[in-house]
Image (cartoon, rainbow, N blue to C red; front, side):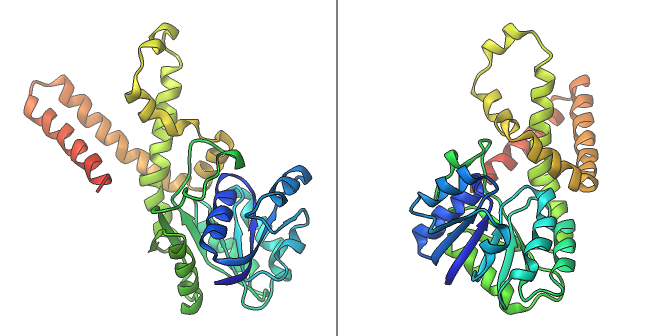
Length: 283
């Protein structure tokens, strides 16, 4: 599909994408950019990286597709830095968990560029971070939301859709604003709740931790995610996350009142709705 793909950032998702692209034979050549020479050298030793590069501008020269896999707060600055060096028709995307501000920043930065930007959010990750935990299977079968702006050319939208589908992802198309609302409820709020629960339990008797089972581990697993990464996500999408918290607070107060009362049927129905929702996630 592409002669050369550049991946900016070699963390969990960046390295996993490189592995997947190499495995699926989507690009003749894969270039990986990283800030540290040790990381560049490590990437260059892998079969899924044909070229490692420390220089950001050089890394995108000659590429047909550039994927920005860096923390959300850095994406705007990176796109401004690489925009003048992009080849004509180069498609640029990112993997950020927040889209509205990133898409606005990137649209502005790309006005005088030969390339074109469309945002992406592959809903694939792990509570672990770093290249050591990367896998070519990380994105396989997962959802990916692409977020073109209103006037995005159809050819670029289709090109990006086909790329993610070639990695066996299920592709959805949302506006950047709708993405941020949906992600606040179905991605960011769950992480916030897991972190909140973990922080609360950290204040309890240390001996009690010994009796915890898989239920607690399953519920709090994602709280292990990189705190700096999630601090940036929460900050950039705080308006939508605050709205999701308000809805959650209403639900929490509802079950609190049910527990105070004597109507067991209402409590059962509340729990049944939650159980059915969880079952549907596996379908």
